[in-house]
Image (tube, rainbow, N blue to C red):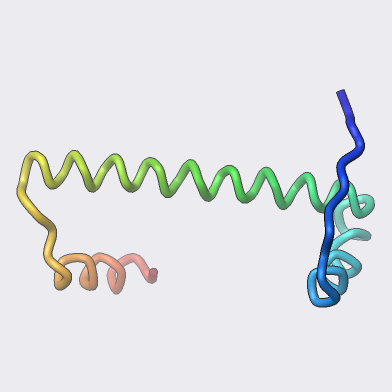
Length: 76
């Protein structure tokens, strides 16, 4: 069910929304897509945290060097 929600945006965010709205079929659709993307990013981060926690439990602490090497390898 669709419900109205008030969102306050600063001028910079309004400008971004004005650019994106036509691509997504309107302002509401652009905001909805942004929320879905944010939720997916949050899920990825949670999965990564879980992976790292499990890794550390099995292999011990991960060094800063190992993290940097992985970031370089995967372009992060």
